[in-house]
Image 1 (cartoon, helix red, strand yellow):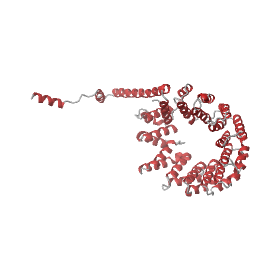
Image 2 (tube, helix red, strand yellow):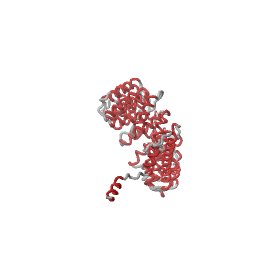
Image 3 (tube, helix red, strand yellow):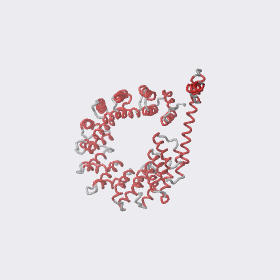
Length: 481
């Protein structure tokens, strides 16, 4: 009997609460304002410590991490659009020959056109026998992307060796690297013209040399480029490359050769010639562009739209409307809409407005129209775009919704930002991760300092990327955390 009573007592025994549970109940029973403030302070200190741990971990990765760990960190920084570790990455590659690390950092800096690695990249070229091919190629590409004029001698020296493994990349990099300085551009153009004329560049490199000559933007390139473009016996890819190069140089001396190619029999050369007309002006140029809208080859119509866009050719608006509404090639429609958005006179804006509000039009067309409308009259069109965004969400049109979300997320409103602030607050308070991330962009783009409370709240979000971006947003807006 005593034993049965004992077992019954054991079965009724409550589990012993954990220390965390006891602490939680203790805090829940506290009702004073002071106690709640203490709790909030403890939570904030804990979060700050966590953020500092993340920063310390990333610094340790740069100092001691493997190539795989550093590659993963660079990808994270790329996703976050973060540059606060750039100085540490510069120090890192100054003291390593690890191919994966060097290539990763060169690419990360190059895609942002961020200077700071020029000396290390030049050293990789000069000491190429001690570096992996991948390292040298990534260094060469980087020097071109940042237009490093100081690298021109090193790139010329590399090309003089005619080492086939580096030739293609080095040609293109030389053209880009020299383009920011007229003297260096002329020097590079002379070098490349001589290379093309007097050396055996080979079929694999010829097109790259022509492209590089155009990249210099030196007028010294025009005679050779016009000769290649006008030569009907020349290979089609080289004629097209010469036309593109003449367009980049933009010198009137090259216009005659381009106009001559507009009426050539080969459709690819013809479309390249029309596309090359963008930087030029004059009645003859306008006529050639408008005639190109009638070309049966779709790439020529695309080129006509692009040239109209570049020149903001108002005479092309009726042609662009016809193509946007009725062309049977989607890419032609897209380019026509973009051109209308760049021209942006009253007639063009009215056409965009009608295309946007017609829900039977394709998602692609409506999204490009929305982008153009927001670009040219954001304050006027924001509410309309938000209505369509909400409609897309209601109908589970995910691709359309995400497209509208990206457009409003990148928008900058001139004048009254009250509607933008209202939408941004909605995203920050009630949106999902994507809405909140775009909401932070909207806050920065439109300087919405009135959303400090919402931004501060997100700095403590459990999603690390979101919390980090919120902290960067607060910093950029001058909001104290």
